[in-house]
Each structure stands twice: as C-alpha cells, then as structure tokens.
Length: 217
Image (cartoon, rainbow, N blue to C red; front, side, top):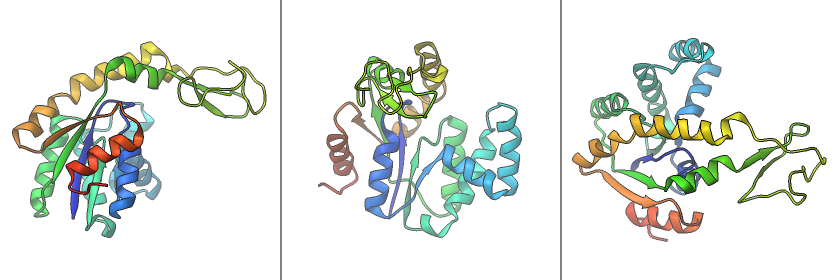
C-alpha cells in the first residue's frame, strides 16, 4: 500500500507524474480540482456547498476541501493507497489531512516536493497558445505551431489566454509561495519530505520518484 502527497508549484509536472505512477501502482490520483468537479457533478452535500463558493468566484474553505478528501478516500479504490496531487495547499489542510488519516488508522508514506526554478516555471506556464477558432492548443517550447503564430489546423491567429500571461502566472506563483511553501517545513519536521528536481525529462523525473518510493525502474 502506498500513500503519497505530491507538492510543487503550478507547472512543476506533478499531475503528469502522479498520473503515470498511479496507473503503475493501481491506486487513484486525487487532484483537488478534479475532485471538486466530481463532487459538484454528483451533487453530494459537500459538493453543493463547494459549488456555492466556486460560483461566487471564492476559494473553497479548507474544512470543505478536507471533507471532500475524506469522502474520496472512503471510496473502495483508495483502500490500496492513493497519490494526492497538489493537496494539501495550506497548513490548515495539512493538519486536517493528518487528523483524517489518524482517524482512519493510516499515515502518509512520503511527501515529494517537485523543485523547479522560477524561470523554468515561467517558460512552461506562459508558452501556451490557443486557437480561438478551432480550439487547438500549442506550446512555444514543447509543441510549437509550424506556421509561427498561426494554427496548424485552420490557419487562425493564435492567442495567449489571460491565465497564461506572465503577470498572471507570477501572481499564481506568489500565492503558492505564501500558502504552500510553509508545508515543506511541516512535512520536513515529520520526516516525510523528499525533494526531486522537476526540470529533467518526464522519464528521468519518474525514475527519481520511483527510487524514492522503493520501486526503481
């Protein structure tokens, strides 16, 4: 049984690695955003409560998020373990998770922090370009369009979404630093924290993670 938390800034590659390792271990990848959408769609009591905040453009309170995590971990597929992708995001959420797992008679095996430099994060997060006509997505570094600033599929001029602009990305990283970085000390004090560089290719980062969790390739 493997119970892991993946922490790191937006664009660090947590989701990609969590998805790959979860498939290998046959455990669920639990990402907060996906979990919120599923709970809202299922119209659970907590899902409906979360929706009130989401519809108002407000952050879902920590106690509601922890409650949703409790519902998710109670599902049968989580009995063999899980990978929490980007949760917890605050100290209050970390403390709530610790209480929840204690009540379940469980504990985390490891918390893995993805370390990526700010210039690299900016390159990853600001490079996306989208076609407003057909919806095709490109990335200036990883999947560039063949025709410069034009869509390969329909020829329309590509645009950069507001969420991908540098000023917006920097604001997201600042929020992350304020709220989430203190979690590193929290888990370091509990001797759970390990760090991997998220700047290698996907396979190299994956090998580093598997070595940490005792599943070398």
